[in-house]
Image (cartoon, rainbow, N blue to C red):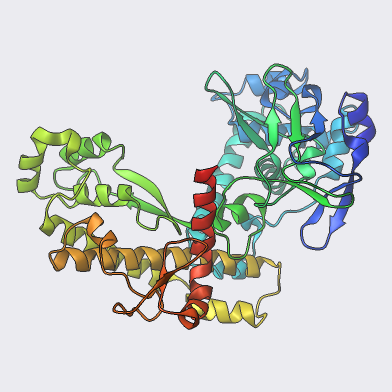
Length: 469
């Protein structure tokens, strides 16, 4: 592959080598020192896997272009990869790249049922089940719309549903996405560069040159000769890392839970409420991410305030529609919303197959084989439960503030300071030095609370650092 890339105009290959690492598997190792910001790898436009190149292929292109409705970007790239892999001759360079790709993946769609059951209750579990059904439906559609119409290009034994799933995971785990100046975006796979592994400790450092069409990678930090070199996929939670890339980051500060809020069109006053949701930048079905740094986003409260409106509320709000859902509507509405939230989040937590404390115990005792699928699923469950518990606690605190007459969302911020561990109030408190968010009455409580506080602490500190930069 390297010889083909050099002949095609790639640069930087002599300073890197493919290597196997104990913690990340296959990756790229430096053969010399790199300074942060230094460009160390460029993959030219002509060898990139793109939709444009798939359409331009003299054999594959006409079949793809004649398919109606047009295929998605991911399906186009997946079929392009399978088509090259199926060819016995030609495409020598691209086939070298395909040969270097993993033979299998550890994305959640390949989990055995028992492995996936470890994360029952998570949004990953639900999404994976939905994805399995969607892939089966999409594959059947491809057989009718494309494979069956061009059997000479797509021999059935080389385009099975398992081949299709493999190719999709190749795209999901190795593609890079870039925004273009005109507002469009491009998704591409770059041979050799796709061997770079993820690390949150480096800056995002891969760039697409719109004018040349080349893909370049810069050093996200200083590297010594022999180091593994990384790129940063971005602030991605474990549920998405496992679904798309097949790995997790223990204690991931970016962990989240995707809360789906839905109102049936036959619900009372749906049309009036739908207008209010739209004016608040929402929809009748809204998916909102709950995170460690923002466990109860204002958008969740805005949605539920509108959903819980009664006829008398709507009559008052209608003339002021643009401002209707920005802040608290009434004490009674707020209490109803927050009680519903506490009950709903408690219900979501009850569905988890293994509760947080038990998971922590199992992971500490090595109950799950480190790095295995069940181990990864356990970390996803752990992260999502931590987020949901924070969400419930925030809603409970807000509810207590409203019921006591102390007010709205801002009231929580003005509540008496207390130790995050023992909840003592009338003592001298010290703030956590890293995140500056929580307070403790002493060192003992800070140490005892750290295991619970660690993920949120790191996430908050990371967010504060990004904002300063």
